[in-house]
Image (tube, rainbow, N blue to C red):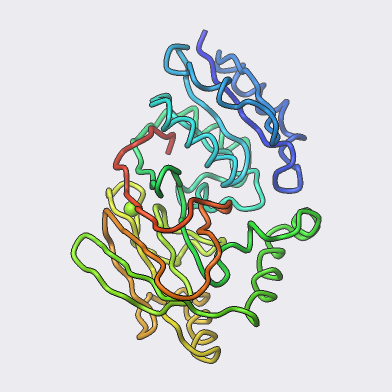
Length: 294
Ligand SMILES: [Mg+2]
């Protein structure tokens, strides 16, 4: 009998997934797949649960949670070179990656999709020693999910990120960085940078519409230092789904990026919604790094 390992975050996304747990297990069992379950919280040893996955004749590793839980699983898969296909059930506060790979919002439809067994290799980003599936970023607004109060997050979900971001706006100062891509080196005074593996951030899936998790490249978006008025116009453009063409935006596709902080203050970079490694950053796209149900 084939098996899946199901990892779920009981605290994610206002906890709606737990009500569907039995239905999901039933769906796998109907298809002769045995389910072993792992309920995550901060103190549990997920590594122990996953590290021998290559030798266990698994159909897949299934994660029901948000970007943060997927990030934890992907880091373990990369560190142990686990090649078992990964399936995503979007059950978190922030499901940017699941949206990028078009996983349905309905949990049952998700399982149906996973049972079709359409497995493809996808890229993973690496920032110093930490892997990311979505985005590595620093500067204005970029660590709102990290800073958002847990109670606020549970009460209003994703809106909490915008509330936290808006609070930050008034005390923010730009900082200068030296950036090295595959073909260019430049120094710029910036508000923020975002390095995407997929194409979605803060639920805005159209942010960089032609980026892919299968092209072996990262999408670097830099928003230069500009005044509040210009920044407002820029945000409006992005929200309206316009292409990233603006004098205050630098947009590049590249496999490797080095970022060194020169002047000014900036919080530690954020990686998939959690605190990432500190500057200087060496960021790479690891092509086709993990197998995934798409
Ligand atoms: Mg890419």
